[in-house]
Length: 151
Image (tube, rainbow, N blue to C red; front, side, top):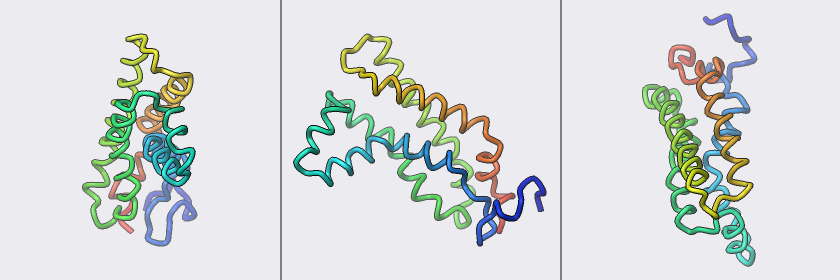
């Protein structure tokens, strides 16, 4: 047993509990999907909400595509014990998806595109901080280690 973490850091299945930062970053990565759901829930203001954050419909579809790994990651959290090899690899899939989001935002900023909003710049900073957290957090890395989550 690993003595780095207290027994309270494990759930009933013996898995290391995912930190709050994991959930926040996944929500950040899936922000287009969250916005899409919110726009669908508020039918009258949905188009206005989408136009506020995504004035270019093309950027909206790219955002949906880049958010797919995060949405699948949310679903995969329930299968950590059943699919440990996939869970372990998914950490890097999420890191690559977050890096792709950062690259997309950097290209828009570099081109001087008028579509870039202050929200886009703010989310780019959060994405960069999230990527640093994904790579540097020992606790998060251990959550993706099947040997520490053997139950």
